[in-house]
Length: 531
Image (cartoon, rainbow, N blue to C red; front, side, top):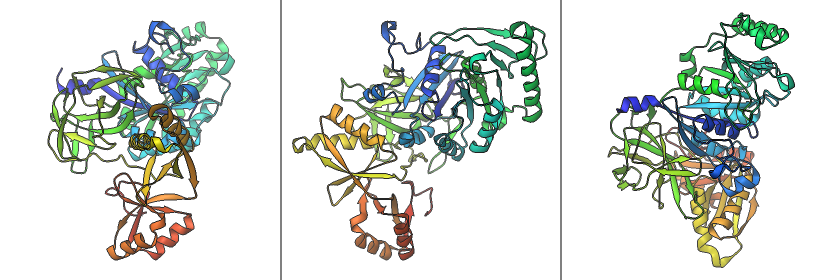
């Protein structure tokens, strides 16, 4: 295949949602359709285990939540599908935001019982910032939940996007019958089956076909006809162009745990979702169809395999063809590197690959040269944009509990913060402060430091309101600010100065007294003015 065909074949997307909406379950069902696993929740020898395929870190298995982004690939009907399953828990939102920089579209999972939740709104804001096309899957229709029309209204109001149902539920909860596919004009009857693919699709000639009454009772058939008429009257007809420019979100209904309503969404997704196109850098726009390789690191994960102390960089290919053992230019370090063991992922299984194409996410074995946001090219000096660090909201000082393990603690903190689990700030040379979005990250860090690095630590809470990156508008004022505020100034991992504001009032006072200092809420100053 040539480059254009390889690009057209690929669909790279993230599944995002609020915790417990069914995102990881949906990921597994996609893998089931792709033949990547034979039965949901299964491992080798077809033994069933309780944790999902995409939750592979020890702490995820213990807590039953996803805390790291998993990358999985499979082939379905001639397309190469790359799924990035993200953590739903709000404490790990920053990992999800970074993941959204590496995808071409998104499937958003909504719980039909709870509707739109706060975390979902924040994720949608990031999609809007990047104009990412979104498909919505309303899950758990086999439970007593909200009225589907009510859910559609809430989606439009809270997510600020126009919606258009492409499938419609026939009742819900105990009396859930199935879905009518408005896109394909098919009837799909509900059969609960949690582990295998079942097909009960019935061809009917539109909603008026008398066949409909043969398969579902007259009461349900009449109600369905009434609701479909209302949908056709109220909602704009579906337009692929509106979906691709992120102004319209198609909506599907189903039950992920019972493997229902998934096939319609997957096949429609493959039909309408964008293939890799172009991406902005600090120099120019890079098109996927360019012959020369470009790409960036959006995630780093240490110890994916506890038996081998490895460190893997997740690399998104933006243009050209990646080849094993070929030298590529690392633009931040200004040096050439080659990768002997590039891998593709199937949850925690890695397969060695010879080449990869735009849209693919591959794992590059790394001994500390790569960081989040790094760009590789074939010699061109450019840097992909849009992978900033966000201002943390919780700050704690790291207290070493075992002085004999100082080196292990240093190494563990460095590697975990390079993964983006938290941000590390250094003060007075060696005082270490961790900043995170949520409390749960501290549990993850403590657990992983002990189990992966053999280091033990405590965290002492600090009463800071927020961290701000600072840059000078007036050098004299800036130098004076650094001198006077030295007790609340630290450096981030790139040695950029960061100001810890103790309260919103203190921040406003600092801004008034030092107009020559610019305060930034993210670490990406080039694309952001002062805030």
